[in-house]
Amino acid sequence: MTYLETTPDAHAKYRAEKRSRIDAFASDEEFRALSNAWRVMALQRKYMNNFSWLGRPLIQLPMDAMAMQEIIWAVKPDLIIETGVAHGGSLMLSASMLELLGQGEVVGVDIEIRPHNRQAIESHPLAKRISLIEGSSVDPNVLAQVRSVAAGKEKVLVCLDSNHTHAHVLAELQAYAGLVSVGSYCVVFDTFVEDMPQDYVWEERPWGKGNSPKTAVWEWLKSNPEFEIDRSVEDRLLITSAPDGFLRRKA
Image (cartoon, rainbow, N blue to C red):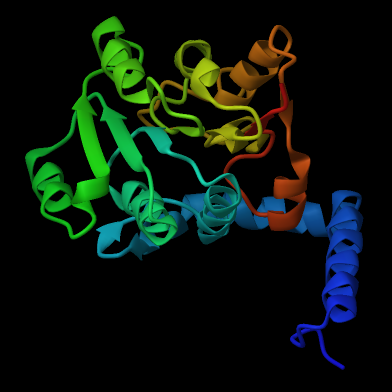
C-alpha cells in the first residue's frame, strides 16, 4: 500500500508521518543552518527575481508561494489585502486561488503603481478579482478605502510586503491586523532581514538588522496576544523570507 492510495488508514498514516517529519525539522539545527545559508546566497544572487505567476513577475521565494496557496486554500478568504504590488505576481497568485475557490477579491496597495504594471494587471484575465489602491499603505485615506472594501467580509487575510523598516511595518500591523478574521493570517514578509549576517549591507535600503519587519513583529505581538506565530509553516518550509512572519489570529 502506498500513501497515494485513498483509504482512510493510508491517509491517516501519511498525515501522521508528515506531522512527525515537520516536528523533527523544528529542532534540526544542521538542516536549518543550511537553509539559512542558502537563503543568504539566494538574496545575493537575486534568485527570487527568477519567477512569475500566470505571466506576472513574482518576486518571492517559491517556498513562500507554496505556503500562500496552502493558507488561502485552508482559510478560503472573502478578501485578501496585500501591501506592496510591484509587478503584480503576488496579486495573481492570490486571485488565481480565489478563482479556484469561486469567491473573493484581492486588494493591492502600493505607494506607486507604475503605469505599465497597472495596465498589465488590469488587462489580465484575473483582473475581475483584483482592485488597486495607489498611496502609502498607512495613509488615512488609503486605510479608509481598504476598510470600506473589508466591511462586511467574514474571512480576511492580510499580507504585508511594502516598506520593510521597523516603523513602517509596525504601523501596518497596527492598521491592518485588526481586519484579519479569527483563524486567518497576517503574513509579514521579509522578516528574514533580521537573520542576515551581521556584515551584510543593504544597498540603498533604509532597513537592516535591528530595523526590520521581524523587530516590528516582536514588538507588536507583546500587546496583541490574540495573534500567535504559526511556526509550523516555517518548520514546513525551512527556506522562507518570513520567519516569525506567519501570524495566525487565534481569538
